[in-house]
Amino acid sequence: QILDAIAGFFIDGPLAGKHILVTSGPTHEPIDPVRYIANRSSGAQGTSIARALVALGAHVTFVTGPADVAPPDGVTLVQVETAQQMLQAVETALPADAAIFAAAVADWRVASASGSKIKKRKGTLPTLEFAENPDILARVAQMPSGRPRLVVGFAAETDDVVAHATAKRQRKGCDWIVANDVSPATGIMGGSENAVVLISDAGVEEWPRMSKADVAMRLADKIATALTV
Amino acid sequence: QILDAIAGFFIDGPLAGKHILVTSGPTHEPIDPVRYIANRSSGAQGTSIARALVALGAHVTFVTGPADVAPPDGVTLVQVETAQQMLQAVETALPADAAIFAAAVADWRVASASGSKIKKRKGTLPTLEFAENPDILARVAQMPSGRPRLVVGFAAETDDVVAHATAKRQRKGCDWIVANDVSPATGIMGGSENAVVLISDAGVEEWPRMSKADVAMRLADKIATALTV
Image (cartoon, rainbow over all chains, first blue to last red; front, top):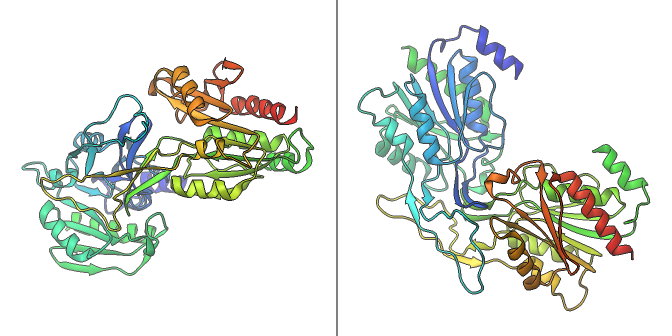
């Protein structure tokens, strides 16, 4: 970690002078003061990506939900809990040369969140009403002005990975989608390896299964190329 | 931690020869492969209690949900995720001389949990149907035969702490309730201190605010007294 920091300060890498926003981790959406809805995301891939970008000389703003893994050194760290807080942190962090949305943001929040603990009553079940969360990726990808030059989204899928991710790229208006299959059988969620498909206007690029650190370095290299041509 | 283990092996404490079951941590109830409902529980208080019991010579079976803190050394460790898995682990661990239910078990699970990721569709919100989870505390406290001699429940409340906890003790049929106020303003949830009220047939005992480790030692002492008179 000390090495990361030293690398960030001293190496005049290909991303020196670039500001890159990276989101990471899950969001937690409160139901009441003691219960919440969460996404399974350890934050491992987002953290590795931030670390790889710092190593290439970028100034990274790292906006993270409550992740399992420690945040990387050498970044501007912003810790949030909900999707709405994440959106606010992202808007505050812009402008940026690139924005990498690796966080697993909750699509919905509980509209009927209670200020006191919901009590269990014999024979009655709680009813949760949901509201749609802001779509942070789409909002930044479709900014009418000041849009980052490169906007990268992620798609964690459990079936039809390429089809779902290709449609997502179109719908959101982002430049790249990094998609993966997070079905429990793959062991990717919470594990140290990842097998991703990169979808861009150049088509579909399938990467072999490798460590999350290697996925991060390969992606950081591609980002550096995209921002410096 | 090594000292804990040595204490457990060599000190012939007041709880030597006793088997005590401790549950700890939150449960996670799946919504789909990537989303779940969780309780805010770091597992810190339950872990401290198990450690204090081991130090007094008890053989502890420690059944824990996905907690933030590492489990104690010197226990028989059983790791679970859902309330249903926790019940099964508890039933497998019995008989015991005492059972301490410090886990924050979800009252409800999602009855309509999906095997694949629920997709976001424009203008539609998901509907979650709930089912009541087994009441592990009540089930063990009301065992017709083979009930542990001492059954201790916990009550995390945000208002009317003593009234809610006294009613809970009555309803569940347990011997003691350890109650606390987990309103965000107290800083107890996720923090290192606790301020508890112990409710038994002897009445209501209000303990001053102290570290979770001190709450654990005081409680372990009381348990030792209760089991050895």
